[in-house]
Length: 337
Image 1: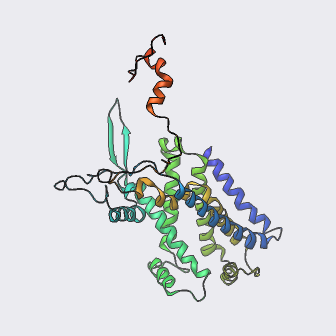
Image 2 (image 1 turned 120 degrees about the vertical axis):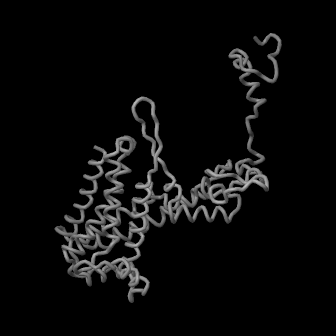
Image 3 (image 1 turned 90 degrees about the vertical axis):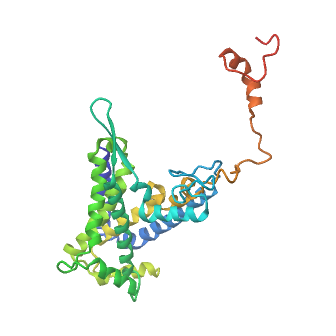
């Protein structure tokens, strides 16, 4: 039901531009106003979330580690899994962001008959996530040809590599196939695997259905519907140059695609998709583990802040602690019982 609810919501969102731009003639609303508003919400929301995380104090040294910490000179430390220097943290972050290293190390747990617990490798999730993110990145870069004139040579080179296995005309991009397969895998994994389905919420299914709808509508326009690409580029160039003009010949399907992209942009800062910016702000990843070398000072420890010390705590609860048999530093005063 959670997945069906999210799927129905995506269908309802896709129907809005079909009716609004296709039947009611609201091309300006779905072609100009809503995309501009979505981009503004994305930029402002993204910055607000990142600034809020950056301002949060980190009272403890809490990097996640799984290697030997730096200690004595004759003990070899793991500079990536347990970095004690800024260089090690940068290397660890690069491997995390570019290669999803922690997801690569992920294992799955299975409970068999009786109480037999087995641990095994779980690389399919890592491979699916890697294919999804890199395909998404390449597709986004390819779309820059709609917002630039002349189109940079780097974009042409990227398109050439992406379509090296040319099948038919127009050419079939490899990232289009990889992207649909990766999103479908991540979606089916949440539906089929009982443990994942149990903990999944509508907000987990909704972005996957939304992204899949964006991908399928774009593929349908490219290979089947055959929209006027000249009019589409005229519209996108107008968006890039803040021109409030709607060209003729842009079909309703393009407005569906553009509206779903706008919904994704506006939804992005409010969702779990913000891990794109949050990974850089996570103290479990961006802190070095040099707790044996340097003292981590609590940034919340201001002189004017009153702390409830243990002595004060014991004075407040001494009678109850003695009653429960908890040892105390000071005995009860005579006549206190």
